[in-house]
Image 1 (cartoon, rainbow, N blue to C red):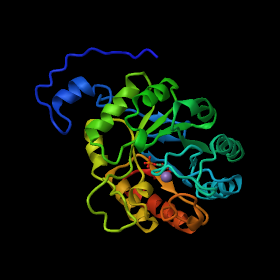
Image 2 (tube, protein in one colour):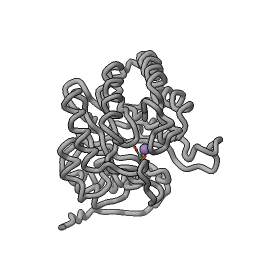
Image 3 (cartoon, rainbow, N blue to C red):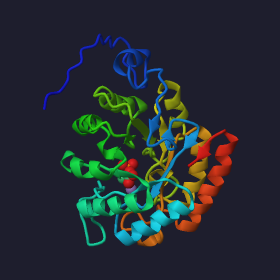
Image 4 (tube, helix red, strand yellow):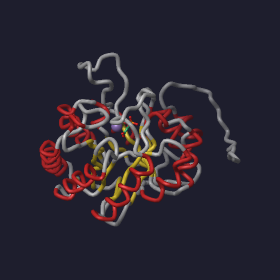
Length: 301
Ligand code: PEP
Ligand code: MN
């Protein structure tokens, strides 16, 4: 594949750890441009406005039965976007009957759910070879944190012109995140949503918690970029009881959307069972979030 080489006058006079003026002018011109960027899924579902769209669902598309239960709950709570991965990057290479990807079968399930319940679909693309199948169903393609700098994948998803969620790698600076975003933007796709999903830190205060939500990344990114920035408190905390407080912190910090993992019986979730909210907890979280977002002139949808 032909790769575009873009020549720019790079001074590199002041190489820095964080984003410098030189970076903004020469290396991140698109991701830091002053134009306000909205990502519209429909006339009522818009990222980057006063709305805060919620993307919710289980970790993986385990079965039709699971996705129907989840979709019904989303409808009850007036949430419009369902998530669930049929292709999943996992930390370890081993699989079992209950610990595997449903792949194209899972995508077929998502297809049915999308049509029956009129929900928008967010799902992860792990490799270019799955792009055609994922594209048929997804309304937003998710690039997971582990693939944040998979530059060939970024170029290919950009070319689809579909909305993209780019998750920040848990060890990445905002400079690297915007560098990855720039790879998408330079290919011409501006339907970009950035996602803070927790970073690695020496202590997380619980042995089950691997990351800490970098709430500060939300205002920091807003200072330099005009793309919507959403928060994923579920993957950040790994621990359901912490998801509500981190959600409220994200709303207060100005997030433009949320990713919340939920499952009818979290303990039975095939992956990361400590992380999803159950349906009662989810309902409470949405109700509280609606009240809180009003304080800031925003609206949970
Ligand atoms: C996910 O959203 O299910 C996921 C795996 O997220 P992350 O890439 O942030 O770990
Ligand atoms: Mn997950």
